[in-house]
Length: 289
Image (cartoon, rainbow, N blue to C red):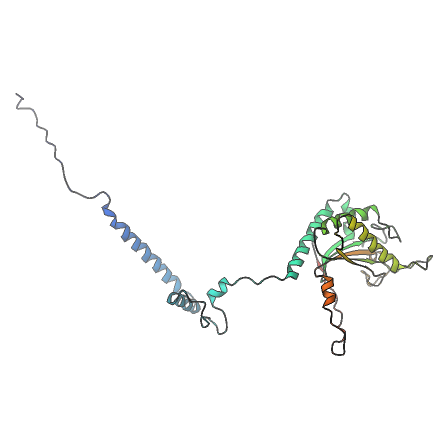
């Protein structure tokens, strides 16, 4: 028989009580609270806006599907709505603008390629790359402003290319051969006359130098038919206008045309009494740095 003094152990089990997570009703209450706060801040933002924005917001919520499409939904008479203007596509670039951008990039690539030529520092002042109304213009100038006379790209008084001229034109041809633009090559001289040979003048020299450049460039990468024209100007288009004898007037220019010269010639307007000859506008140059 167990001892009367032995303590009896009683286990009490409680039933009911709180559920583990309050049932989830708190989530609905919290979502309502966040929604109310968002609405509050939107209202606070809206009351500080201009009346135009308030009207457009109101119009959108009144008819979100058709707002911005209706003829009368414009904020200003005859103008487009704010929402419509925000999604309007940018204006399409013209072929001429794209061509000029491409030539601008080609000018930069060409300059980088020329800088890789050994000894380029000695001739960099004789090379000028710029954008003109015609297109990309590359000039090889026989002299610089720091010297009275020199002959870098052609032998003096001759159409024979020097070793430097051959190297420079080869690099230029390699870069321009990647394009599809037409090319014009110009030859220019100073006003010094040939005293010994009266049958050969600056006219022949300027044209022959342009033609020599053409032959070499076609061998070094220019596509067949890409060179549209060669021009011999003699001394009639000096770079140093106030000094026709300046050696810097002796140069060739390679012009990569923005537009197709054939198309421009087809669209020429005949000269009549109603269409007199227009005044020639000087070319404005934009230097590529």
